[in-house]
Length: 287
Image 1 (tube, rainbow, N blue to C red):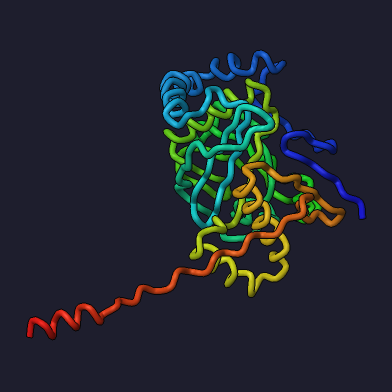
Image 2 (cartoon, helix red, strand yellow; image 1 turned 90 degrees about the vertical axis):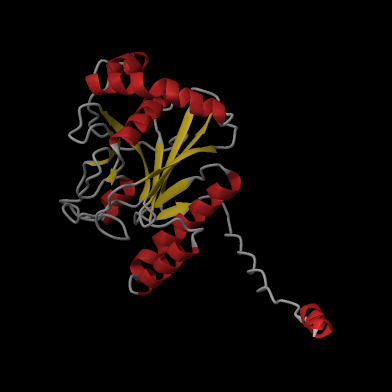
């Protein structure tokens, strides 16, 4: 089987380069180029010092050199993880609320299906003049999507953006996208060219969300292998605080390179059962 392997920290195969808008001619000019746009300049004025203070309060070093984003569709959450050295473990910086949702569980496969993609992506655009305040592009369709989605009209133009409206993107508030945009721009300026974004169906540790997913999979068996892979990636990262190596096979299916078994959840504690004997004995004594 032919396997194309890509790692978010160091790509091992050549991925197609999407058209990137509002990028400088070379890396060293990136931050000043971004700040030349009015909205980005205002965002830096409003958010940079605030972010530095938040980092300090959480014992994090500013600026982050590595950034990792996880989004959970059903739970409407977007996590931001950071670290400063390749050998360090990621630490959770903040969790944002996703304020609108289009479509349902499952990957995007067709232009106009209103689905938010699911899978393993990276930031491929910084849009300082977005119609949705500010926007970070998601590289959908990625190599997996190109094999599994409609060959003529897979769709595209997927972003994490502001304005709290969506027809298939990941929207947060304008205030929050300003924070995330500044953080991503600073991290890219520090040298991280590929900021990973994992878009997952649910937060797998949530019993309620996991139960919903399991019911959904009963009628969507073709989606189950992808969901199980994302679950393994989720728990691997939670345990190790490292992003695993994600592979794409010849059919476009995701595989995790590391051997890993999801830990079994411990059984729930026994229900409390009151020992009524002392109380009953006391009541007899009183009577």
